[in-house]
Image (cartoon, rainbow, N blue to C red; front, top):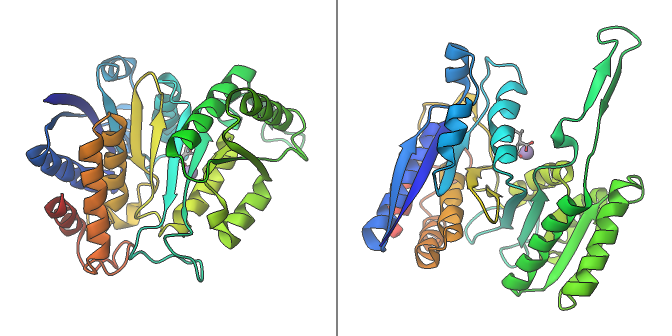
Amino acid sequence: MKTYRIALLPGDGTGPEVVAEGVKVLKAVSAKYPVKFDFAKYDLGGERYLKTGETLPESILKELEGYDAIYLGAIGHPDVKPGILEGGILLKLRFHFDQYINLRPVKLYPGVDTPLKDKGPGDIDFVIVRENTGGIYTGMGGVMRKGTSEEVATQIMLYTRSGVERCLRYAYDLTRKLGRKKKLTLCHKTNVLTYTGDLWMRAFEEIGSAHYPDVGRDYAHVDATTMWMVKNPEFFDVIVTENMFGDIITDLGAMIQGGMGIAAGGNINPKGLSMFEPIGGSAPKYTGKNVINPLAAIAAAQMMVAYLGEAQAGEAMEGAIVRALGSGKIKSLSAGQMGMGTKEVGDLVASYV
Ligand code: IPM
Ligand code: MN
């Protein structure tokens, strides 16, 4: 029996409530399958920052290196200026552990409402591979003459050939492994971003034709991608895209799969430490009320288990989520409208494991 060391970072707002339900389901999995989890909790987040001025101390970063995975709730606090916690904790973790893939499945489960008219589970089932450590997120750029009418500000979209290549290879491998439509769509904006877009496009074509002749190649500009995601989501199998475009289109993806209550993601370093999180934020207005939907966090835990190599336990978790959604007991996936509380949704999924 294998024991995995999991670092819990519940974080801010509703993060702790949803992580607790994820842990509940993981414990239910341990009771039935030969897999154990050792949890250690870290209080990173807005409260700690307000008390100590610290976001993510080096000593904790070092400690985290000893875990098999990180399970994160949410980062973001209404009393802390935007950017401090996001940059100091979430992005710092992604960069420090070189989690260069942000894997965000867009899957509409049976029994879940989508705002897309006439589309069902057979139409909405694809994966977005978002590059996660490059582009505008590197923080390169600067400002001069700040606060004057002559102010100048830049924010640079930085990509290296090797950074683009490793992301593309991951996406090609995944498309092949999933073995479905076997179609990889590159999403970019090559008609305007003639340097970085061209870098992505050439690497995409070269790697694809040389190493993945069995995978179909397709391209869509990012603006058109949003259009197709609404009009013809069945068109997609795997989409690979740069960081900022991926940030934007995955929120759209979350909405068409039923909302932030169900959308999960993994920040992945294929050879290192990965981190799993629900995509929705800290939702301050729902905090502490037992009304937030924990399914996204439970789905993130399920991605983590599958990623750790525990296929059977991962399938059991996904099956439990599907049964809970299909039970008709959860009235809506929106916070406060579920017809039951956060804890009760966790209990329901745990009972189906
Ligand atoms: C996400 C979030 C983050 C991002 C923010 C909170 C920094 O929107 O995980 O999608 O932009 O990556
Ligand atoms: Mn986002």
